[in-house]
Structure formats: C-alpha cells, structure tokens
Image (cartoon, rainbow, N blue to C red; front, side, top):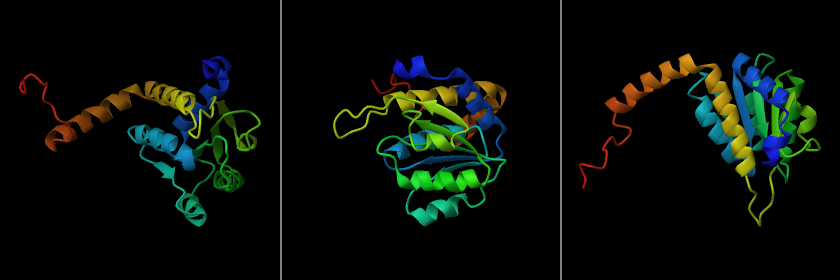
Length: 181
C-alpha cells in the first residue's frame, strides 16, 4: 500500500516509455535482487528480442555482459539494502556510456538513486533474516503489465506463435483433470 501511495506516476510512465523505445533492455539485479531481475527478464523476453539479464557470477563478467551497452539502450537496475557494490559499480559504468537507467530501489537515498533517469521506489522491509520483496515484485509486475498493454497487438501475435510451439512440442500438460478422475 505504501508503495502504491508514494509511487511517482510520471516516473513510472517515463520508465515504461524508456523500455518501449530502447534498442536493448539490460536488467541488473544481484544477490537477493537477482530473483526480481530474473522475473522481469523472463516476461520482457516475450516482448523484446534483445533482453539481457546481467548476472553477478563475477565483477569482471558483469562488465563483459554489458560492454556493448549504449545510449540507445535502457538498464533497469534493482537494488535494496544492503546495497551491492557490484550494482553500484556497474551503474557507474552504464552511466558513463549514456545509457538511460531505471532504478528500482527502496528510497531516494539509495546509492543507486543518484544514477537514475527514472526512479521507482518500492518499500522493502527486513522481516527477519529475509528481505520482503512483495512490494518490489508488485511494482515490477505493474511495469510488465504497462509495457505489455502498450504492445498488446505484438504480444497477442507472439503468444499465438508460442502457443503453437508449446502445443507442437508438448511443453504444457493440457489435460483438464476430468480424464484423470
């Protein structure tokens, strides 16, 4: 609720437009934010041919995954406390290349906020030893829906093609349960 009440709608709309206009979409999220980055990348991959999820298998490998990044691209960077230095260093690199940066983080005081062209703030509380990623995931879900809505004809076409592939290669179980009773 706090995230919904405090979200800057203009920043959100600008972030959606930046994703729609980008040549390539890079998604950066390490440590606990890696699951959020993976979720966003999974769905954006249905919409765009050039989605890159930047993984943190090593600091140098992060830069190797991004060395082609340019001002035609967008990077969605996700980081919450305790903020990863890998993410901050990667954002310095990305910023130096003139790439548009969408930061998803917990506050305007986050160290990744200073690199953001568009700042999307989502509350993240430490429940115990586990960070609560409910609000950030909801924000990311809303971002996916907004981008999808803006490209609904293309999404419809893509999913029709995918349904044919999934049927041909039996990706999903199509039993309705009635046959198994």
